[in-house]
Length: 383
Image (cartoon, one colour):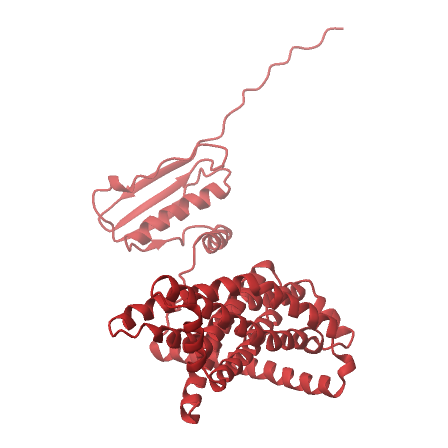
């Protein structure tokens, strides 16, 4: 049985996308027809070929419009953008309602909203800065109050004080800081002695280099340089440690167990710094005096015995006491700054780094302010 002959029907390709432009002195009419698909080639739009600038533009659809998708919407959007750049009104009333709704959604999704003007005037900037300073002051006062209450509580209940943690912190901030404190103290003494030697030689008073170095180290530089070293070394370590604990939710776990973080984590660190700072300051004073003695021996030919006798005659107990008092306060301020910024650190690795940086900056600022206060107070008291 033979099969009947079949003839394949020819496939008629869809009409290509077509753009017809009618230009008049009053209006530019753009008519879109054909098939608009993203898989097919899109016609070009050459507005530069226009003879003159039209007063308005109108977009219409041709009767032969076939299939269309987002490529048609994109083309209409390009025409609208060109018209908007020339401040030409573009009428879309001839388009079907469903197409206008889709075009509105397309324009809303593609066009970027103009950023709001966020610039502030001088009054608003000053107000925000003052509010920020006030909030930070309240945070510091609240933290300081918690530390005072915790210290009073541990003084009444000494068995709850973490002595082992305090001893470990004393080793870290005390014994482990001796190399850098030795180096800085020795170099500061050398610098002070060289600067004083240049001045004293002009008056033939070389021996008074011992007075200048000894008083500067004992009253000011010993405590100040030791505090700066511990602010960058221990204060940042405190902030990083507590910030890491905050990021790992360890502090939240302590609060869940009913343990106050200030009692468990902060007070041992503060006690360790308050005890070790005076000892490190005395050690730094000795290294600075040794540095001045070395310069006097090598540059001014002053024997060590004469230098030592002159130093003892220039320094009395009030000078040493003033430096010790300063160092104790500086140690507490360094510990407070490091622990405060660590407890408020963000729960991320970047937050831990920012907490360590802000702890050092805050500690240095508090040290300078406290040193200025002591300078005025000691002057009034005649110390």
